[in-house]
Length: 352
Image (tube, rainbow, N blue to C red):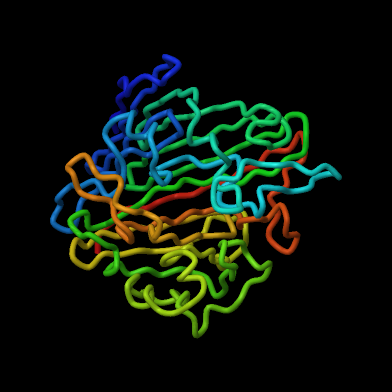
């Protein structure tokens, strides 16, 4: 294992962000910055051993300070959407910033993805680790209570990248939902991910309205464009007529992962036939949210100049369901004062 730390740039207030590069003995490499807990690159081999970056992002801090669709970001205090930017807790209505149509998205205007985290790193025989910590103040982005957050990123020798989340509510009840918003393309030469084969271990999905707010129930995937129980190309049904495909400009859908919530289990597997790369997502969370980059508009590009266009990547956001603070029928996101939220996600990289 190898781990390096170097300056990545300065924030407007003069604070310094760093870039950490974790590399295992097989050549798998992950780089990340403590600004926003952002995954900057994920380098893996194809079936012939060619190493390429399969993660959409930039090679400089100023690009991350500008407008982009949460590339590689550590998302919180609440991942995904909260309807109307409001929820009521213990009889008090809390108002959040509106930044996505009528809703609050991914923690608000300045969520965890736009904060500088304290970082410590360690190198062991079987893994290299970066531990990020941040104290979110009471009232930050409208959320109640002081929250101590600790996120551990680990690259392992077995070509797995593990994310362990922990958040403790210090003084008030609050809502917490954390995820990482990495955008993957297992064939970086391809403009879209239509040929990627996706398998999701979920018999039910969360139907949503035109604003992508869940309707509060889980429907069978049978007979819908959301049936990925067997490997299915992303492009096979993405252009079909369906209200949710229209709302998400492709897939932007939450799947209720089979198995017991809280246990680490396989949520999804993606393979790419040309490069032979594979990616598995394992999680303790109830929702594996498949997003196919429908809102990417070509305004961002890679360091080599490749335009990041619509459907040019996919995300597997492991999380709780959107709008859960307002919908008691969904798995809870409530964190009581003095309690600690814990979640683990593992991305396993491989080849066919």
